[in-house]
Length: 485
Image 1 (cartoon, rainbow, N blue to C red):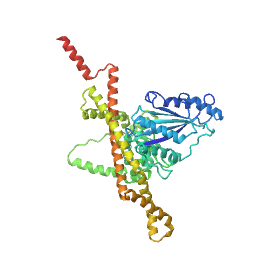
Image 2: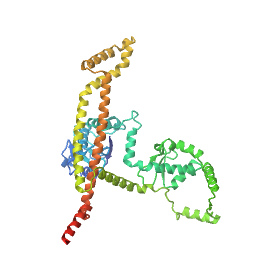
Image 3: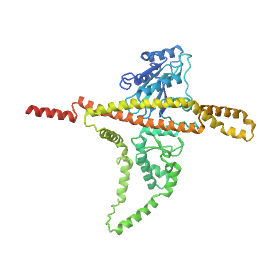
Image 4: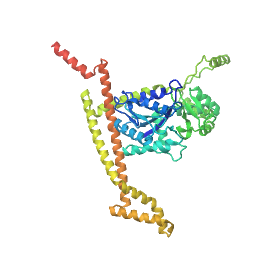
């Protein structure tokens, strides 16, 4: 699926108001990110002079201050789309959304695992001088629906847009979770909350314990927002506790503090210790601090000489975990293709390129077949929508005579084509499953191709750094042996 996001670009004062706009335009066209500049396009302007043209438009209409432009980002799921297809989608989006009103520069960045596109457009229309206005709800009403429709045209998955405009769709939330790496944090945060609940007698003490673990806390008493949110050390954003599950809403946490207090926990612990005593395991109690020691310890703590330590440090290993996952992917790739030399890896990469073309042809064939059937599918869908009206007409309600006539007309057209509504439903399900299958195949092939490219890039980097691969070292050793003979 593809997710769209829009940001605004502000001015930098009277001296150089368009500084941020110029920097943004330069950033999205960096050759290293755009396939050497191949994945850069423009709308209503020349790419080489885009900033000058935008500035001249502002000067022409006397609107050189305040917001300078807008920045649209469209991100695609890892492995679902190649850079060229993404570039076509981004170009069509820019043309449809901005039309003949705004100058825009767009580009696709293919230097990361998640291919994504950037569109930067002028805040002032070159046609009539009107400033672009983004209103609340435009994302759900206009921006994302266009993105979804274009994705459907290219056989890409889409996201559902909630009918309630005040709520973001679940898929949008899941995408943000995946993008921000929250899947790494969830288990750790839940464990820490569970531990804080057990140690706390009140909600206030729960917040204190959580703070002592190194967490930032927001909306604890709903003074700044509706939901309790926390942020462990190393995490970029606050996360709402309710997003972790039903057991982690503020209301449920308050209930659990009453139910899972330290006293109840001690009862369970006492039973466990009793069982251990029966096993005749000798236990040594920790020496307790004296009154003076406690006061001195508290003084050190309050003066800051005794530093607070974060409870959990799992966040420190996130990058290592991701590196390990990539290494595992590389190893499994080599095992799957039986690759033991650089030549084998290159051969596997060529096979993936051929398979990618074959998959693309197969996908194109399926979509063409479905497109030919689409008029019939539309008739069947309209018939299904009129079914209740037809039932009412058959019961004698002449109010639905117009709908009845339409129903009879559509049914006759289907009969003439030689299909029934049930058959068309089966065909539609068939194409749905075929498209799902080809998408999975396309993702798998793209992933294999990406892994092969990554391994080859690492080998090339090693050769440039003067660290030859094992097979090259072996060839050099064999050459030395032959000379010595």
